[in-house]
Image (tube, rainbow, N blue to C red; front, side, top):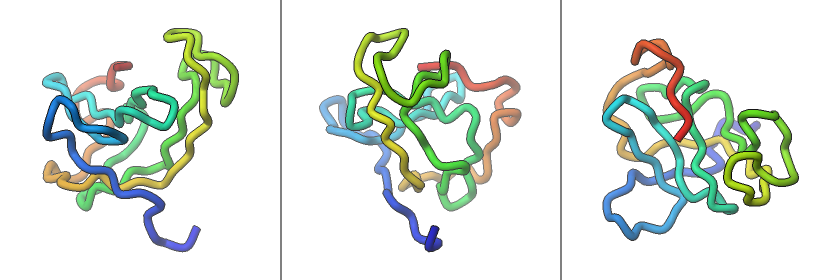
Length: 108
């Protein structure tokens, strides 16, 4: 790792935005939508720092089985294994951990 972000991800602004983009649900769930395979990736087990950097890195995998390839058990789409170090552009909520919203963030 060279200390630079692999990918900056913009906040969703319009319904027809093409991803990947990030959004926060009313219950505090933060997710990245439209990974290359079309999956939504829950950031519930990640820390989001004041500048929007997400730790640890973000991986598209099956949250239930942990597998990194094959078919998703939930949506039946192929799992792409997309793996990036990301920063959420436009993040203004300060540092946030899953415990900050009182629970492990829900799967989107």
